Image (tube, rainbow, N blue to C red):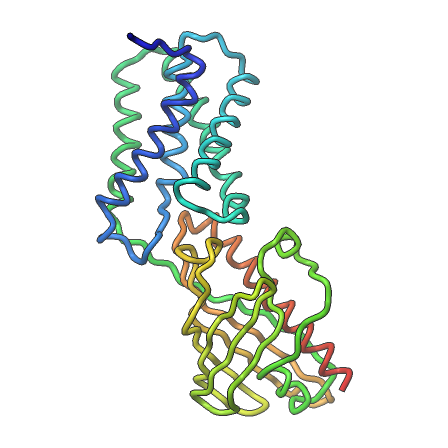
Length: 305
């Protein structure tokens, strides 16, 4: 018995089956060429959503859809794709929130492009556009992807360096409320730090609000001046693993000569999600707010003492 699906249903079903298939096949075919586990490339967030939008309008080409309807249907398709990411890619809620605007914009862009393509009914032009998009996807999938960055923040503390230093090395639990909106939505925020010794090679742990712990090793210990530590263990959290590696952290203290100290916090990280122009904005914002939450706590307890 032959099953005939309504065109509107086809426009939701086939594009999402396409996305699942193409991402799965790509990960199998190019796993060795990619740098790091779980790398998500530019094409998976740009080219695939555009192709998804084009495929949906091909299914709807004989359905008279107004611009508002096409946009709404594209939003529904984007939501389905994001929901499938939860099931098959096991992405965290915060990650899906971050990626949603990107997917939504390019699915709508692809649907608009597809609508114009199939209105003209120019087979040569349509094949050329699809071929170009497919070529970009293959080249991008086969390419190696590496990106590293450093975020730096500073704060002035009304206390001398020797008062600040002991709170930099380790500090009691942070009791202040979170000000950063992603922390309030459930992203883990820094709560406390412990240390096994005050020397190079000592272990250090940064404890987050949900109990996750970053294992650290002190590599520079210049009292009242420089504390640098490598991250040697990261929690296997869906918001972190395969997306970003925090590689090194650092606190620098500068005596301002007037009873105050400038505290500088630096973090080095490696990003595994692309395009960088979009995701690094989020990575910098999150890293900066981790810095500021810790540094403002250090400022408060140092000035009290």
